[in-house]
Image (cartoon, rainbow, N blue to C red; front, side, top):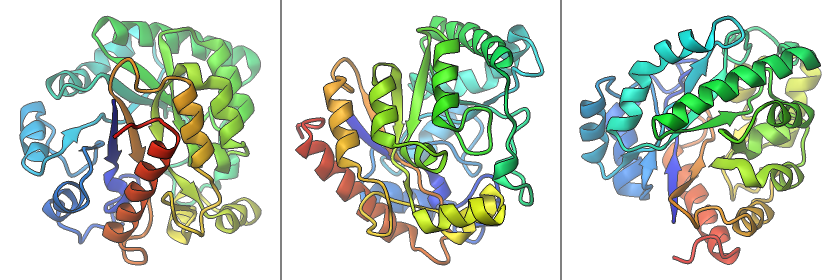
Length: 304
């Protein structure tokens, strides 16, 4: 079964919390749940930390808690230490019925730095990637023992950004480590989303429908802008926006061919951070959801 979700960073950014700071929390949830009609929403810094309060808060607006971003630091600490650090987040996942954990290595990322060019991201050697992948697989194995699938988020400004790095990471990990495929980060990272998704579709456990304004992304590269500067410049948008460079129809077809959602619930999540003062989240997220549902139905991914 296909479920449709969003991420609160369309309204209030997590990496730069001044973006959207004036938007009330209940407005975010009301627009996402009652007005637009999403099935769920991912984590945000506005939500309650207590697992039960979190479930009740979102449920009051007709929303499920899809999952939460979990930042690993496996390049600098042991798997046992990572497991110990994960316990609070694990409790939130289990209490809220989430069976997937959005995971990304952030011990040396630059994506949250307002002034560091995203071009200056960290790079692992082949040996370092193998060692990192082995630790991630061990951590994923622990998650699996708790009923959670680790879905690794390739992301701008991190050690897994480019298509080659996605390939190397997937080769360095095993079956317990799943992939969160993000169309926008794939494109921005230099990949053809359809080709990269085809290659790894069998291990995709979560999907972020992020679109990219190609001229802005190129400007970020050419002018050495930071990831956050790119966000404010309008690098990202939603499916269906004619300014976006990504065709989501082939991506829905690849997911359908791979049987995404045939064995258990699977999410399609619109994650498109924009400046809400420039681009109204209610309008853009409504467009994104309508487009994604139509394309999923046309591809045979969602029979409803």
